[in-house]
Image 1 (spheres, rainbow, N blue to C red):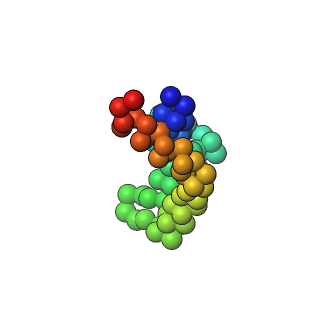
Image 2 (cartoon, rainbow, N blue to C red):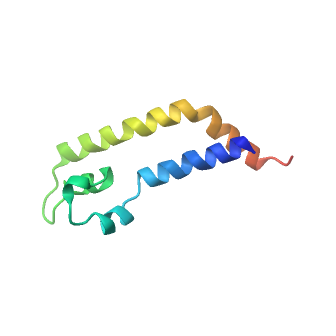
Image 3 (cartoon, rainbow, N blue to C red):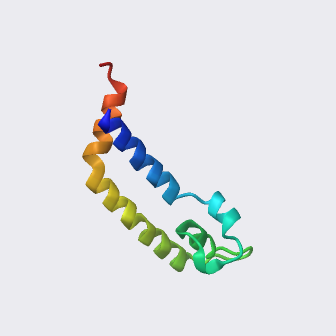
Length: 87
């Protein structure tokens, strides 16, 4: 059951990392405490988009997720396979 639990924890961590709605509702007044997705949304306005800064922020936000996946890749795949097979 360990691989399944580890996979669930990793996927939930990635979900929390990318969460947009709850931080938007809770942190909407103090921009110094914005999470990364809220910070990235700040590069878009009603009539323009700062694409250079936006894509740089996207790239920086992908780096930690890629590192986490590279470290836990074996556990993620093992947990997915364990959950798919009958025991």
